[in-house]
Image (cartoon, rainbow, N blue to C red; front, side, top):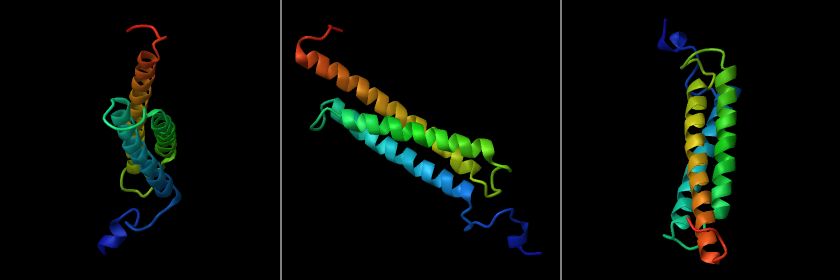
Length: 123
């Protein structure tokens, strides 16, 4: 019996679970990158206030976490079965990190613009 027959799923097979998990993980990674850039902008280390990037990071991160969670919930087998369970878990974690980075950047940008306008509350 060959090693290929012992595997539950072929390594190169891209089923619906793997495809959805991969897409969600990529969206989560994009959310982390955009959220990090928005955080740098909101901290004043780059031009702009980072609001648009913060919103994009939150939306993309939450979408990645939801899709990854759905993949995890609907996976028929465990890790290594080809159902995308591992990718779904990665998508949830990375998506939540991206959403948190975006949220922090949005809060920092809002605080910064409130201080800059002169009419905001102190604090």
